[in-house]
Length: 399
Image 1: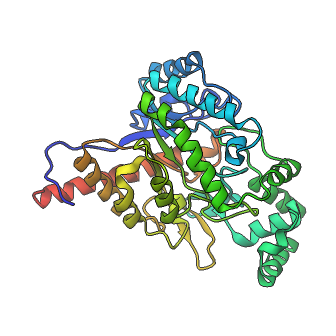
Image 2 (image 1 turned 120 degrees about the vertical axis):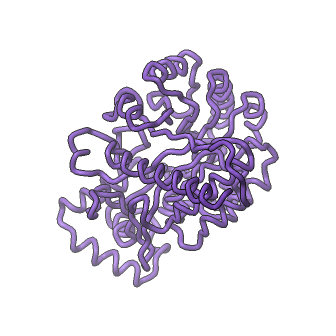
Image 3 (image 1 turned 180 degrees about the vertical axis):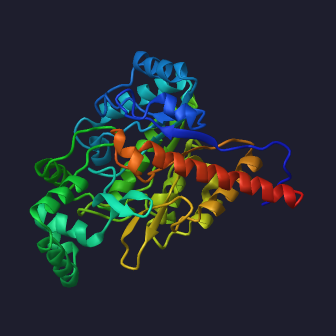
């Protein structure tokens, strides 16, 4: 795909903001060169209605800082909806009302995920690199947590003897302090929340998902999306599903948004064009089988939001958050493809730099793991540089 440059259609630069309690303030985000924020009403319990009044209040806060709010991340899906049990019908009706209220207030994209129990999982929140600390996922550490800290019933069936032995050796080599740090990392709460899970919380939630396999969870996703499709079309909102993070089954739970086949299944089983993707290059990139440029070319017309970050894998499948210019995500190629897509479809895709490193200066401000200010600012600068390089290359080529 090629295009001649008439008007530069640039990615919409945003940063995630966790609301007034975030150590990174709206002025910081504006000074970074962003035009908008990605935020949510984190104080509202999952499943409850986002009222018009609450949405307007948040929108006013954002606009008073000279920014816009057009992307929600996230409008959480209640666990009952994922299980199709309990009060799930009421939660779906509440979700539709929230979508209506968001659309009436100018929200264009709603990001969400369908991961059971845990929205994301890392075994180290402060992995040292040459450019600050980063988030990391290590399999031996995770298996040690699952087998010997969480002590999930039946966990040993999910691992080979070799994997269990390696996890035992890893666990035995940890001090009590390091074991506590591992538990804390693996039981981080929902994004935007300072509250962590407990061992008892997680085990109780896992019991509720017993008997729900990958195919069943997929069907529950398809049913949910088809049930809210009318609300999406009426409100004009695009639903952008975030991939599994990490993109593998964990804790005996199925994962249904980890690779291209999962995406195809969702799009084939829903008929609403408002249903699409949050294309997170870090999450998809953590799985070596995923060819990110190929996936972007195939699903580009249904990509409504971009998370740009790069994970670095090792041969054992462990990964950490690399610099945006490094890692396995092929970000320069993705940005090239994004510029082509935007010109072909005459639209600008909202994006945000994701999971920046925590630099020394970032330690002066309380922030959520992966969301320190200067680390993300560095990532944003690298993304902007790559985007401008793409246009410069095309200008020199006469395109």
